[in-house]
View: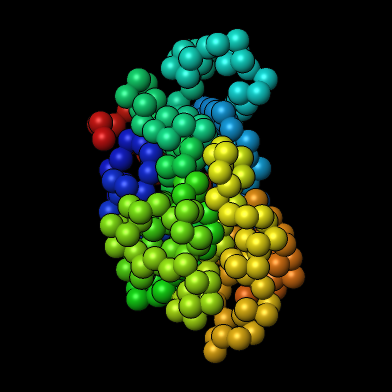
Length: 314
Ligand code: CP
């Protein structure tokens, strides 16, 4: 069994290359399992996992639930919209009450950056961060890199550009860290107000012209504009039409290139804004491969963390 020495998966920060390799090696085995006629293994039998979603999700929530069920775990789902959080209960109290029902692992999405780290200090069971505000989304980065490695063989020396709303994205930071661990060169590209200055200190290239970034990269990871997080009274760009004109990935843009990049998108996609609809469905887009691999990668993370239940601290 590959070695994985962490109690939690709170972010890509804190992992090293061996940790990522252990997750990928395990995910490869589970990918084979989920393509068999009987897609279930007993690895997490008698383990109860709580999926705590304090923020909306389609892919991550379903993907974790499927991963848990394919591993034969018992699963309970919590959504803040229909919970006593609405009556003023704190995060720590909500989770302590759920754990009192003998839950062994927690998968949590929360709108506040650092929420998973906060919880890890309060409770004793493994926690998987399924996205904390604008901070990290480690399993998304792992599944993105796993998918790229399947397609490209290696990420060593590959040029990956992350396009879009970097400022409000948790996928961007986790991807930068994971790609760098695996030896890729990383660029971020978007409007000046949507790229925080500190990204320059992460060892990534920063570009504000989409055509130049597309010419540079082997892989284009296109992120959506997160209007729900852009609370500012001063808009970050004039209009969605203007954004599409400057930063939308279109067939016309790709046709001008000597070679087209592979296209990724973590979803949810805003067709006609950051990506032209027809591109999302083209053969050089690997968006649905990302979703398929998400289940295998999450099975691997659950399995490796469950292997440490009752083990030593992080
Ligand atoms: N990629 C992703 O996190 O999608 P959801 O918000 O639907 O989970």
